[in-house]
Length: 363
Ligand code: HBI
Image (tube, rainbow, N blue to C red; front, side, top):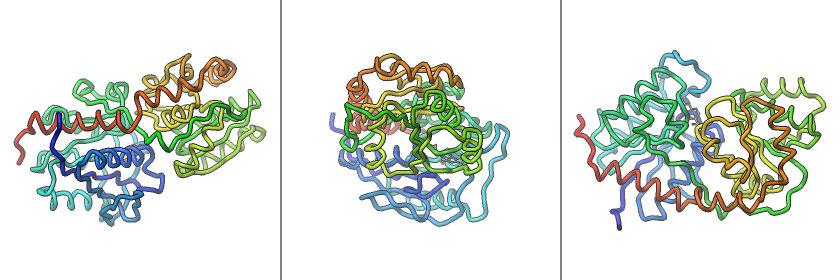
């Protein structure tokens, strides 16, 4: 059924400008949804912190101080609003232009946009990009989920299950432009680890597994926490590791495709795992902790292995069974579930659900 062309306003994460890698996976999700909604004839405008660049799309850049990352805070952290907060400034801009749009989509994992929902006339959809982290944010997510049905979007059910409004969450999974990812049938000997280098990502376990197996581990990603990186190097001076750095997607997929497997070792409930589907798209099997969104991505024994969380020995055993995995099955799973087309269908259906069922009268 042909649906109307929506006028969509996407408000990005306030933790970093788009293109710096600080916004992590949500930057890629924002880009992919923008690309796919535009292809389907919808009008998309992006609002993001100053310095943001998003390939062929123009971004309305907003000045102001970046928000502190939520994952560095504790459960009972107070909500902080900085002087000249870019988060506040982006949402003041949204307030001013809201009449020009059918739907605003919030990509920030922050209290303010959720709290502001009833104060806006324009419907707001919230894409929540991480599991439960801070009580005050849990509470506001849960109250918006009840007052504005269908407006809370997440990556996966296991991420949704960390909130009390799990049943009200709409699972988008994720999507990639698979034409960027080349299938690589014959890998080199190396293993890979990809992600923001920060404690919640558990890099030390992958390094320990590389040390035990003697297989080189290529490390891709932003050194977000340098002291954490240096501690790993001090504790594993002889580990066969090679720091490659943060690569743009086209270069990353070329290097990633050459690897025998990607080790995914999150310490926390990884909401999704963009890295996981990027690896599958290149035909690279996953060896991942049985935790969070990864449990819904890895088809253990078929496209990789799910391993006992925090078990280095588990990683080592999975590495020894890698030859059982058919790399073509990995690419096939990406094409079936994580193409832009599949993600676009899920996203468009979400928007339709919010706009068609009608949106409660607001202030
Ligand atoms: N922290 N406060 C805050 N706001 C965000 O939008 C945010 C974050 N931490 C990490 C993050 N977004 C993204 O990197 C992940 O959601 C992918």
